[in-house]
Length: 346
Image (cartoon, rainbow, N blue to C red; front, top):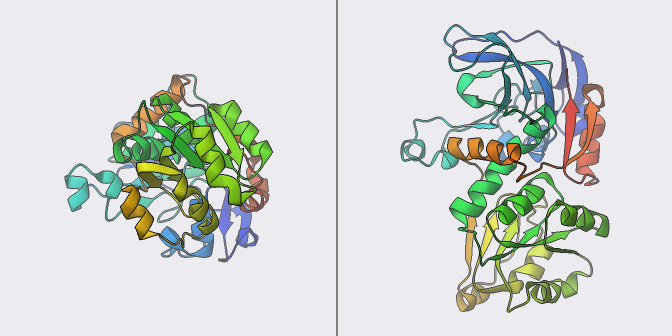
C-alpha cells in the first residue's frame, strides 16, 4: 500500500509517501480502506515529539481520524461487517483505569491515540480495534466524517458536560476558524447559547459568521479586544470564554472580558500555553478555569448524529491527495486554513 511515513522528527520535511507493507488485522482488529483523513495539531505533536507524541518511535504512520470502508476482519473482531462505512474515534480509552470504570472515559489515564501510539490513517489501509470504529450515518461523506471525528465530540463534551453551556450564555470562541473552534461555534449554537467568535483575520471572521456565529471580531488591535467583546456581548461581559489556542497575549486581553462568575473552557494550547493568571481578578470576579481533552463513546455517537442532522457542518478548507501530505501540513502550520484540511487517500 501507499502510506505517508514519518522518517525524521521535526516537521513536514520528515514525511515521505512510499510503499509500505499492508497491515494484517489481528485479534479484535478491523482492516479499513481509508478514504479520508485530516491533518491535525495532534500529528504535529507526533512530528515534534511533544505532548502526547513524546512516546512516538520512527518510522511511523500518523493520521488520527481516518474514515473508510471495512475490508477485513480479525479472528475475534465483532460488531463490524465487510463493506461498512466507518470512522475512527481518535482516542481509544483503556476501559480499565479508575476514570474509565467510573464512567469518565474522557479522562482515561492510559488512552491510546490512533496515529500516535499506533499506526494511523495516512495510508491506504489501517488496522484498528473494532470498538474504535463507528458507522457513518447515511448522507454523511467520508470527508465530513473524518473532519468531525477529532473536533465535534470534544466540543460537545467541553461545552455541555464540562462547561454547562446553554440558553442564557454568551460564549466567545477564540481560534474560531480552526477545526475545534468551528466545532465549538456550531455546538454552542446548537446548545442555545449566543455565540461570539474571534479569529486572526477579517477573512476568517467572515467564514465563522457564515458557519453560524452571531457576531465576530478580529484580534487586532489587541489592546481594544476586551472592550470590543464586552460591547458585542451587550452587557457586562461574556459568561464563557472558550480557548483552544493558549496565546499569552490573547489570554491577557480576553480574560478581563468575562462577567462575574464566568467560565474559561480550555481544550488546546497550540500557541504555547504559558499564560499568566491574575488571581486577584479570578478571586474578585469568581472566575472558573475548566478543561478537557476527550469525549465519551456516547458523545462521539451524538456528534455523528448532529452532523447527520445538519445541525453541525464540519467546514473543509480543501481536500488534497495523499501525495500532497507534506504541503497540507505546511499550510496547517502557516495557519492559512479555515476549517479542516482533508487528505483523500484511496
